[in-house]
Amino acid sequence: MTDIISFEIEASASSIALASYLNCNPELVEHYVDLAGCWIEATAENIKEDKRVAVIYADALKLVERAKKKLATLPNDELRILELAGSNMLKVTDALELELSSISKHRNEITKRENIVGNRNPLAYKLADAVSAIFKYLERPITFGVSPSNNDEPSTEFGRAVQKAFEFFYVYKPTRPLTDDQKSERKNGGKWTPVIASWRDPAKAAWKKYK
Image (cartoon, rainbow, N blue to C red):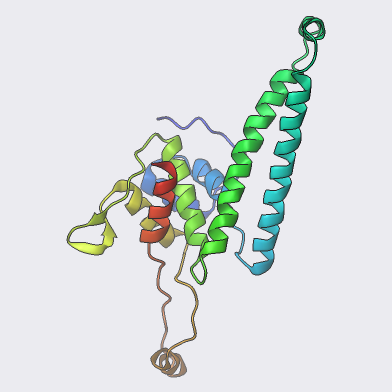
């Protein structure tokens, strides 16, 4: 599918790298990565803010649903007057309900994920969601599978894309206290390299949402 989304945004180096791997528009990648909240540090304060934003969208959706029900009680004569006047109020209300419903569902998924990740990296789950959204837009299959010869390697295009995304966006396993060997290595001038987060659980969670 040819990319038709056009945004006046500058793609990051990470988004450009992932776009090159997926053979798609870098701005498309940047859009979905940004929409998933991947650029927001998953601190306790930001998680609290995510929950507050989710409540705002949920409340707004309820208000629009109530407004639609109220407008549905308008008499037919009034509806005809609105139509003759060229009013698009009812269509706008329908569109607003649809968009708020989509955003509210997405925000609820984010807060739900943040509640269950524990000491795992929330960015990994957000980025896997972004990759699945990109695949959905590109009409590519969102499938999950593990290589029969290596449990650490994916067997599907989607799984490999999530794995590559973690590399391009530097998604590491959660920081834990250094082991004695790691402390000794750093003390002696050696370099301790953080480990890229596993693709499996985030990719599986994103796949379950879209299967």
